[in-house]
Length: 64
Ligand SMILES: [Zn+2]
Ligand SMILES: [Zn+2]
Image 1 (cartoon, protein in one colour):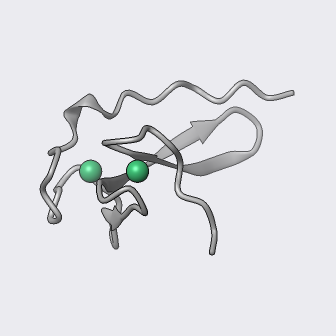
Image 2 (cartoon, rainbow, N blue to C red):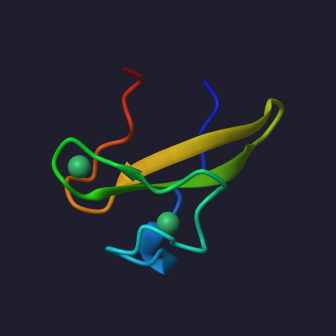
């Protein structure tokens, strides 16, 4: 198992649909009405993974 580094989303701009900290194309609107922010995290041995988290409910973005 590869441990994914915990990302700290606290530097994201809560409530800002044009959050500059997010990856391109984010934030997305969450079902709960909050904004889902995204960051790229480096994973040892397997490159990079995109992490998403809603600022309001704390859930990652779920594929439709
Ligand atoms: Zn963001
Ligand atoms: Zn949410």
